[in-house]
Length: 90
Image (cartoon, rainbow, N blue to C red):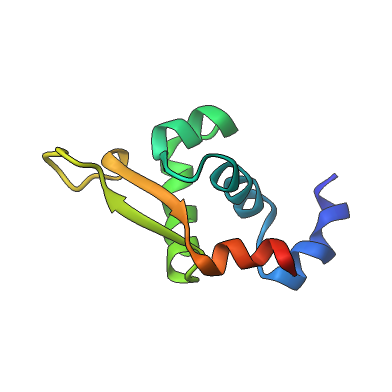
């Protein structure tokens, strides 16, 4: 199934798992790693590197949750950046 999407996703520079994350973020805007994991049935160990790649590509913003005591990934909120929103227009 993912092979059907591959040519379309390559054109916008996303892998299929990255695309699934972006779908959740386009729907909900501000999402914790835990919520993403629940929605996609993925562990935080799988999501964290994927989210870091999306952030470095300028597609999402990751920020620490208000009141979080540590800087671990579970206390971060993720939302699409303007570049991530523009991907839907391509």
